[in-house]
Image 1 (tube, one colour):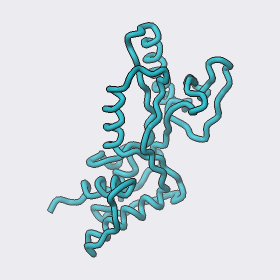
Image 2 (image 1 turned 180 degrees about the vertical axis):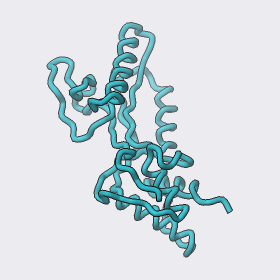
Image 3 (image 1 turned 180 degrees about the horizontal axis):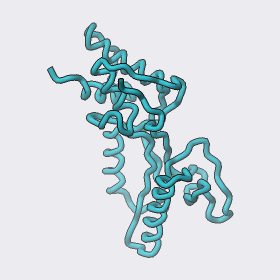
Length: 196
């Protein structure tokens, strides 16, 4: 039985607050480099977590920033993406969307421990487009970049939408899924349908 393991749900966010775009990441969180003040955020990123993975992410970010400060001809753009989802992602690994899509599309049960748990997600096509656009941008003082097109959805609502998509394959009726999270989820869902 496929279970949605809560440890596999990646919830992370993005860059420093807009009102302090020069903030620097530390193990304590975002700090104002001028005052040392810890900037509070309701969201947490992997690099802010005090565990081996979080520390390695923060160390890598700081290494890139250090190299660029020493070499003015270099630039770095750091994105802190929330849970990325999209077609053909490996189920039962690190994406609850992939796990739910695979299970529901293949008539396997899913388990939800907290239907109200809110996820922040970004669709892989949007990530690719944003990265392509960033390559062609002029050098910016802001190393940490905002992530565009973040979708917020609860685990329960995610499961409900995916079950609706599965049911639509039977009754041949589906509401408009032309844009937003519905479009991205539907495109993802159909990539998991069994090949007949």
